[in-house]
View (cartoon, rainbow, N blue to C red):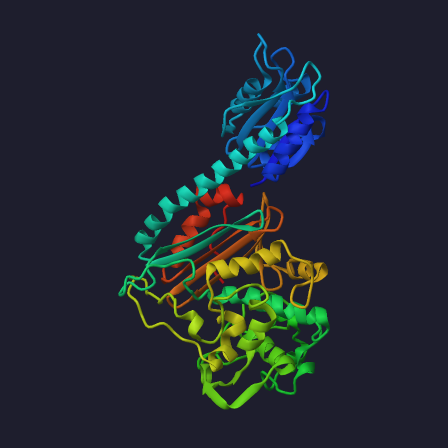
Length: 494
């Protein structure tokens, strides 16, 4: 929640209260003279405080209230510092009325914190009470969010014929809430729980991009070095432009490859690498093969045919990703090759909600699809990864340093007026700031993730139905998620 605490202070008492409130809400704290009234509209919660002078706020606070813009959609609260007895009333109720006249929505009654004498200091325990009052505002907001989602999600699932959904909510770079809805399999009616494994499909690209950026950071691969220099095997014959494709091109979907090859559309490079954006799973498959050549092994005795007769042999990419990302990040229920830890899985369902057999990926499947869409995971596991992206721990053998992380999240190419492509991530630009996002869809599954580095918040949604994107779309465009994220964003397609 993006919060602002504005205060005036004559003897330091209101300032101390404001600082305690700001710490509890995670909000920005500014003296009234430092605030441009027009900026109040840019916050989800505005808390204004003043000393009480003859029952009124200070003239500076009063001027702010008069100059404030329309505050529809903004939550408001008011506080003051005061002596215990007065015949004139207190500043906080007048501040609250002033904010309400501008259209703000009062979330808690106005509050006052007691000072000793005319100049203070604050009475013992009042700073702690200010902190507790602010925490109550945050708790109230969290409880409302969860209650609203618990009412809305089942209705959306029923309307779209989506059997199961699992969600994780991140606030202040911590896992605030997680919950499973519906069933893993409409035939067995087993309920979805917090550890149910889904297919996030193309959301997998964000995880592989992170691992690739770590290899770049270590010098094992150059972000702007042609990939052909790292392997003698050619991903495509007969086109010299293959020698131009770099990891940056792949991660930013500017390699020139189509999404996936087929008998009708054999693999080809459709434009000069780096020239424009075109979403490509084949690019990720190419980069994965190079990473395996540098770090892993191929088993030539275990091979199978894939699209357009492509021969793919098993690799150890599952072990590599576990050792270098999944395990260090605490993703215990995540993998690329089927194993005993994935038995609590969601089955795929068609648009009518009818189940089909769960695909259990083999080593050859991982060799072909791991980077582009082969991750098996839970929203809780993925949330752990997402928190590392928006609020990273210190760089180590597995975690990116500051420069690498910033480069990964830097817009590389414009897709539309509101969306840019970063390395592995899309960036949605909104009036309330930038959000890193990615969607994914495999037959019977749909998923979406979004997060704000600035706000330190995010969400992870995974469903086991072809119509899952309809549920996700309505959630993303609805008032509940708008209130939490600070912006509306439609489900990204492509």
